[in-house]
Length: 188
Image 1 (cartoon, rainbow, N blue to C red):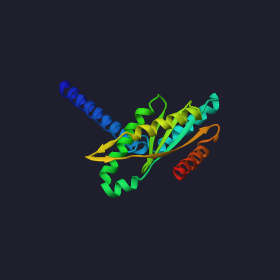
Image 2 (cartoon, one colour; image 1 turned 30 degrees about the vertical axis):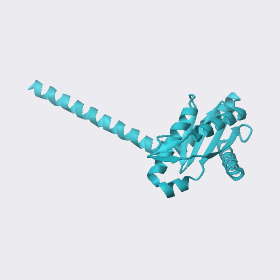
Image 3 (tube, rainbow, N blue to C red; image 1 turned 90 degrees about the horizontal axis):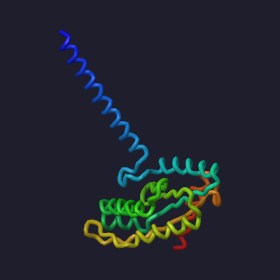
């Protein structure tokens, strides 16, 4: 009878739709795992590198600037060793939240590159403006943090490199910003 075949077609269509939704959900999850830090939800090193390359190419065409910042937390290992990894994880999440509150223009990127290292991309930002942004980021971390009943004092070091002053490609900028953050750490 025609009604039973219509019913079967409707069931089949529903099954296909459910499969499509499942596949889309899995693809989204795979992309998140590939490009997002699972702890903070921030872009990871891979996505940060992709965005940096795109912004550098765009800045080269438009004759604009891009500021690249690298932030490294002081004594993060001590927090993990004395208070435990769960508190360390809470600290990283709080740092991510605070950095995003300061770095919030469309196109800006705050990424967790690994461990206690955060990368920040500021397209169309001069070196002087990047220094102001870095000071604001460090300032927001100085406010007291109470994590699971523990008062945690956070300090960080920031290195800055800018396109085109410090390099005209992503790799050179990343090398220079890495040297800058190590110099900031060394000179305190």
